[in-house]
Length: 365
Image 1 (cartoon, one colour):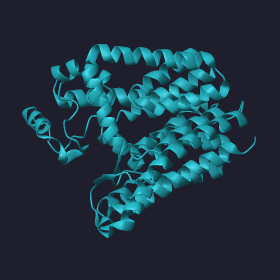
Image 2 (cartoon, one colour):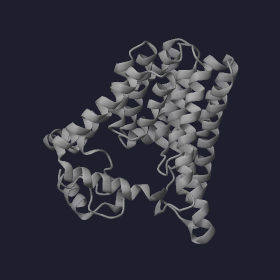
Image 3 (tube, one colour):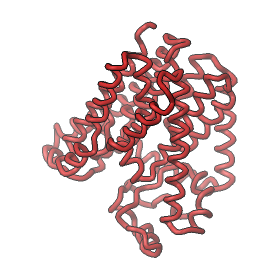
Image 4 (cartoon, helix red, strand yellow):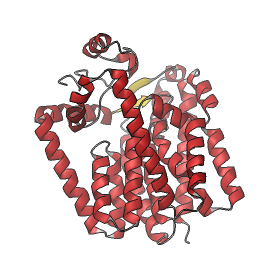
């Protein structure tokens, strides 16, 4: 537990794990090349460490995967409610499952046992309840999601746009309470280590085959302008976030908040809530230096909303296009190539899909 935050000054991914982690993994018969830096709040380490210590790594990961998928399944059904049930529930669920199985997004999220499943499930459940008038409950659930990953904080913009103070107050109070519990359970020194890890990541960007961040691709072009050997990178590489790119992330996040509020307010009573939730999920991903491909599972859960916005034929074409553009075979092919191909492809995909959702949402209805 005391080594949960690595002492390394550099964030690590898979084969770069520090010696103390590799030694522990070897003693547990866990592959030493299947680890990545822990960058979640200390609260969850304190809560799950006793459980993880009592069972084998495989048993813990299998149980976690079942829990993650169960919450995500509830989130898929919540997205159906959030979109005013445009098609039968079984059809919605079937389409989401098909996308999960046929695209690189579902495969990647499952292989990494990604908490993003849980976070997205919580977000969608929260706003389905919010739509039904359960404002305080929604604020509470979003606070829990934000205590796992930072980006759910931006979903509180919807509460502000609606001037729903009950939801916003619940969000703030529960968030503060969770922070207090975290300090009590894990101690302040561990929180200092956590903040130190975040500070490292704030000033770095990872060139990776699974990074679809606009910031990541812009950083790549900036670095490549001065270092031609970057074009020959395979695998992944950590680099300093260029100074000229740093402000771009903040600008994009501010624009995300403004656009999300506008989408919600322009579509009152329609698909405004569903579209604003989806837009925030996509926009915060491309605005972050570490916007991973598996963060698109919110798109997987919400994609069938197109049946509420377009004709059935157009909606089916859009679903097919999404499946083809994110198919596993293309992803596997890019894994064996130079990294700039993946950065360009996924960066363009993220930008186009986010822009498309914004365009649909900002049209007056």
